Length: 489
Ligand code: ADP
Ligand code: ZN
Ligand code: MG
Image 1: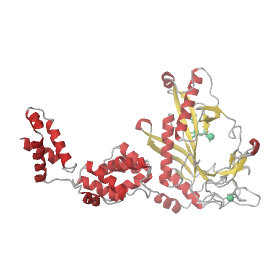
Image 2: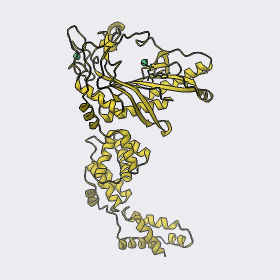
Image 3: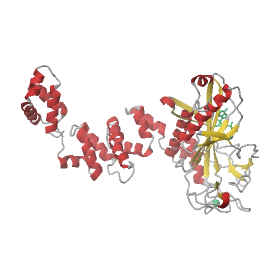
Image 4: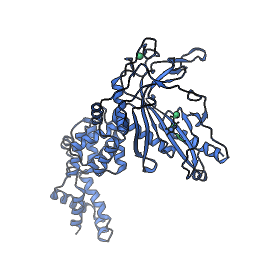
């Protein structure tokens, strides 16, 4: 039996249980305990100092901004905050950690008992409990690039960069849900402004724990931890592979060993790895160089109040304005798009029609041109798009003409009313003019009139089309229809 994808019968026999451990780099300019820069991509070992190298005599000083961002994340995830949370040392030896320990939080993490609700597979609402959220410093990175004779180099620029680790309870029940949870977590942290959460650059990293248990059982099976996934898609793929592998082994009567496995993106498999995680006693102990973090209640409350509207609330607000859930989700998934839409609303746009104009018409054109709504190259401002929606709503122009107006707005940056004036695109709603055009169409198409009288009612559609053509789409289609019907008697 192949490893990939559990057959249906097997899927009924086993339930998949997943918990994620997510590391997120905080968007600070300097490191967690020193003033070194956190900028990504500098030449190796150019952003280091005695503190992040833990040279004798150096002392760490916590970065207040990092603590504030971690607190924002913990509050956004509805964690209980421990104002007296502490620092601990996690001791191990590894080339990317020459100082021999990492400062982290073990016994007293910043946050506990949070939760994240998101739209899971098939759109069903899911809530995952957050076991803990703690602060720590990042390690360095081993590299082989540019090293002679297969030697390993160590770049310590990343050592000491502020991180949070977010550990979920094993509440996820499938690979797709795991991916959707991770994407929802990313969006939440993006809205909360704590990180740029870029998986490709490593500012969001995920280890996935997965086990299977007999369907109906409430005990947890032996877990396998998977590492080295570099995209949301690979998190799902790795878990799907692992789910199939474990099911096949269990079906064959084997036991699952608790181990760490690496995801091989190219081959699409996981393989067991000897890693620094295993066979290790980290000998955690309180960090002797640092006191308790000491968060004043007022600081916690100020931070809570400073959080912006978060994705779930924004989704609910848009739905309350009448947007279908899917459409609201498209806007919320992109903070720049949601901000654009909010400005349209403030400028008086109708929610449903405005959202359609934005996400179908404007976004379609911008995507084709590779431009973002928040880019200066996007020459249509939210207020202008709202005004365009207003012109359609008032009947000044038809929805069809609005597309041409939008093209012109994008090209020139002009207000829609200016474009309509300049190009003479006002909708013709004048009864007299429309009646005249209807009579002209009837006079020019005797065959259609004969067809109509012979009972082919669709012939009227042709005549309506002729009037629209003659007025270059500007006639009010409803009025044209009425006029044709009237003239045909
Ligand atoms: P620790 O790493 O502190 O020893 P665990 O390994 O128990 O703690 O948990 C780490 C992560 O693994 C958590 O996200 C948790 O939800 C998840 N997890 C724990 N047990 C299981 C299991 N049997 N199956 C899947 N995930 C699990
Ligand atoms: Zn430093
Ligand atoms: Mg673990």
